[in-house]
Length: 404
Image (cartoon, helix red, strand yellow):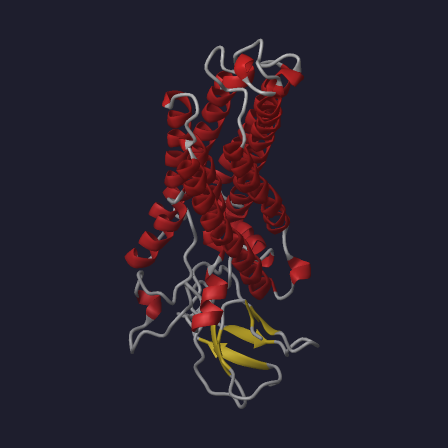
């Protein structure tokens, strides 16, 4: 028993700093992308609150492991000393607190991912699916909480009574089944949202595999949730194995919800450039190469006609403005503080327009970034490439790029 308590403490307080570090890295990455912490979006602030729930899960599991609870073999509680009885009551209260922290941690991480998926799919038909899954998650959370606090164990004080009159107040079996059903089914639905879009996207194979890998990490959350319930239902009285899986599931949820946002920070630290930055590829005309990394690709393209394509472009632009899609650019500043300029573009650079210009705006008052706009009609896939040198700045850009 002592070894199990020590092992749980080591595991929980090893995973905890990793999770907190990922949250901090995500916030730093978003600040780099958006230019200021004042521009953080609602999902970023939700993730800041996840620090509280994740901390609560880790504290609670260790308190439960160090104290007894009311989940005991029949006849055991009657033999307790007053001190053991008080410890069991104290531990039982933390079991209930642990469940609340776990539910909050799990569903807040879902909320962060759904907000990301919402901006990824703006203007696409998949956005309706995101809203349906979000509604299902809200419904599942409310039903789980109502049943947990108001149905399965009445009166609620039975959750920390030693011994209990209702076995559900100690085993939590009905609650565990209900929460597992809503948790796992919603995770499966969420897994279905990004993968079909990425699979159909006209992206280089290597980049597509990386993105699919990142957004497939939810599989590990589902696996952790299944194992959590398996050990809850199969381990004998007194086993602490299920607590290890509470920690594992909570940590995995935090990891998966933050990994998709880390590229701007990694790019800044290791000078990697934008993940999908546009690069010049030798002497080939990138407009003739459908797999060129210097092309801007739209998720889900192809079907739906002109209106759906226009909606996808608008959704993508809105997502970019909100900071959820980083612009594809690579800049090399020869002299800081250069002024505005106009770069001539060929008709192959901006398809659907015979004569277009890319107009470069000056740096903002804080010296944080440049803005650029491309004028022209019928812009679909865009390849922007500087053709004639201008004094002071050499820049390859799609729409907007922030630099420190």
